[in-house]
Length: 291
Image (cartoon, rainbow, N blue to C red; front, side, top):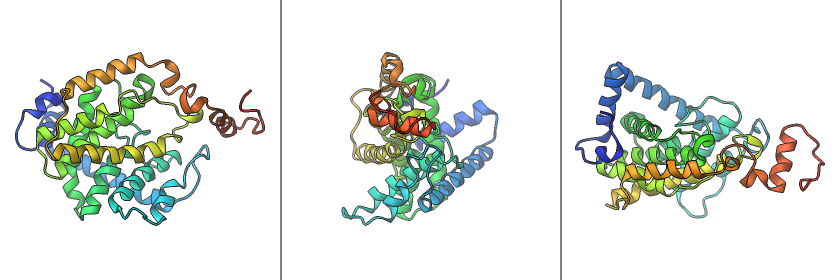
């Protein structure tokens, strides 16, 4: 029987070990093959962070491409290196995606920066090795898999809550395990992250995965770390984790089509959003955005 977050919360040991065992059984792969695949994905994540922090080349639509480097190179007036690192890492990955660079969909391309931003950002802040991240990454993948059994992980199906919400839940669980949390804390970290994205719409300007997607990954990588911190302190979701997933699925069905990745509502439907879309698509730049 497939694990749920509620069931995971009742187990002992490392949450990732239970999900790894499930993956081995379901996929037919051996343990080392799964771990090797995770190491490869981790390497791609880190490479995309490195490239993204070094580049200010514009994206395909020209709306982003310089934000991660700008933040990374800027002074830190808050003297909060973890906050800055997590945001910059996440944005770097998504700007690489917007430039058509190689990234790991986690769980989607539009939400690809949240998991590496939070997990690798925290690890680098603490001076941990990449090998320490392999099992937490297994856990992140397992959480994404659990959510996907209830709702399609796509903005077109459930709004951005289904993409960035899922990635935040995955990242929160992974960071929690990285910092020593057990299965109950990991499951509730995922639930805390997910419940605080409920109702988030998918409104990309021009239909491009650029605005608000790049900065949104930066925000929700921090969100995931906050959820992990709360769970590690003993805070638990009042609503059971599995019910939070069901709530997201219900809300996703209620969202209008205009707010599910069509580029026809929200920020995409603002005067400036329409003007930027027309410019990116090579249409008349002087067209009246109110027209």
